[in-house]
Length: 222
Image 1 (cartoon, rainbow, N blue to C red):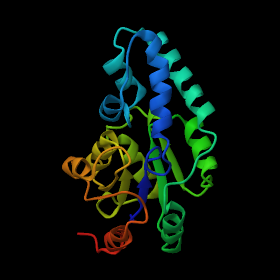
Image 2: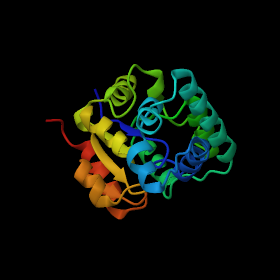
Image 3: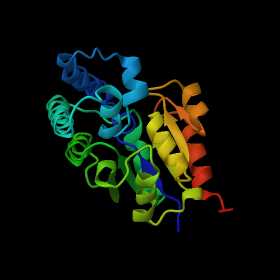
Image 4: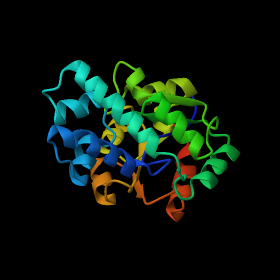
C-alpha cells in the first residue's frame, strides 16, 4: 500500500462548473424551475444525477429523468469545447510525476464528459485510473468512488490525498479515509474547512499547497 493522489474533475482539474450550471438551468427552465447559482452549488454540484433529480424534480418518471440527464450532458459537451486546466495544475501534476506518486481521477461525471474534459486540458492518459461514480453501485457522496480509486492504485487511505471542490466530493473522500484538500472554485475556504478539508486553496499555485502535499505524502504511516 502506498500514498496516492486522487482528483475530482469538474471544478478541480478544470473550471467547468459554470457550464454545468448553465446546462442544468436551460434544461429545467421549461419545467418551471428557476435555478440559481446558490442552489446549484449546494444541491447539484458534485452530486449524482439520481440525487439531483430527487431534489429538484421528484415528480419525473425514471425514463423522463434519464432522458433529461442525457440531454443535459449532451448540451454540456456541446458547450465544453474550449477548456483550460486549473491554474498551476500542469506544473503540479509534473511535480507529482517526478515524485512517482500514483494519480487518479474520481468523478461523478459521465465517462464521455470525463474523456472530453481530460482531452481538452491535455491530460488524457496522464492518470492511472479514472473512476466514474455512476458506473458503480454508489456515486459520491458515498465513499465507494474513492475506495475504488484507492483500490485501483493500491493506495493507503491514511497516507493519500483527495482534491475536491464540492461538498458531495469532500464527504465521499473523507468517508473513504483520505485527507482532503478543497478548491475554492465553488465554496469559500471556511465552508470547505467546516466540511472537513484539511487545507483550502484557490488553485494549484498556492504556496502552502506543495509543502503540505509533500509533507503528507512522505510522512511515515501511523
